Picture 1 (cartoon, protein in one colour):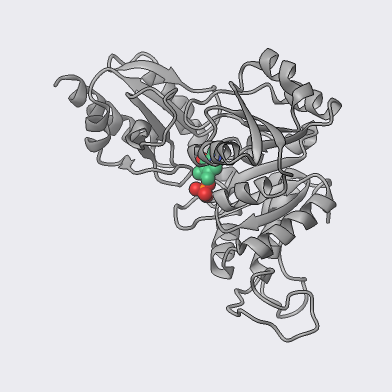
Picture 2 (picture 1 turned 120 degrees about the horizontal axis):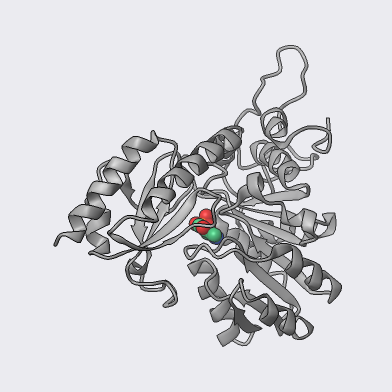
Length: 354
Ligand SMILES: *Cc1c(COP(=O)(O)O)cnc(C)c1O
């Protein structure tokens, strides 16, 4: 069975399982061992574990490439950065994920790379910079401004100029976009978010177009000590099995509630691409008070879980100044939309009165 022959929603359920022989378990067993009897491919658990391999098979097929998992999304991002030669010219989204943006600025200020930042929606500027770039680091939609890049245009031009392209596709997930199919070299995911989907683990992944790049990242993972645990890989694959039903339900909730938020008197601006499970609102009243006034919506960072979460992003000191102070990021879960609406609406009205 190959992922090219079946729908991704079928692949994610049927792939990454032990061979179908009598009495074999239907799920890859968790192997709690740091070391293995000598002579096989995995001698030591920093190099891999069977649950990670099963997860990589499933995720690789979803993105039509070679997946490798890391201990967090940031560990995956750092492994990618560790592939770059000193002096690499990097063109990157200025409102990329905070941790990524901070790391890129650090590498630039230490003289490891030359960083140029861009708005992912400013295609003309990005195209004009490609001849002066080695690496194009895109995120789309962006966290938390929900800006959507013209990936097809940018990736094809990057490829034509020999620029390596990396797309952080955490918000879209393989349900909504496959950057490798557009010609990207690397896709980055925070598996912590909707891929695992239950806010119960930290993990990252890179999916590569070439097997060579996969092997280089495998070496980085071993040397940087960024291997996720067997138990977390088991949980992540268990969560990934239901990716499509969770994504579609969360997205339906997002579409329904954002259409109501658009005209809400306490909302001055709605940011929502029209698809996906994340939105952001700018509120008229006190944004912290909105977050503190909900009962069903949980006031917490992160996103992509089955439970709806909200957060004022600028409460984080390192968040980009391009993010408005009164912006609240909404991560839509799979609850009943009428219940979610009642809760959010009362919190917005309550904070707008004071
Ligand atoms: C959360 C996130 C990351 C970082 O992933 P961690 O698993 O938290 O290390 C990277 N990019 C995006 C878009 C994210 O939302």
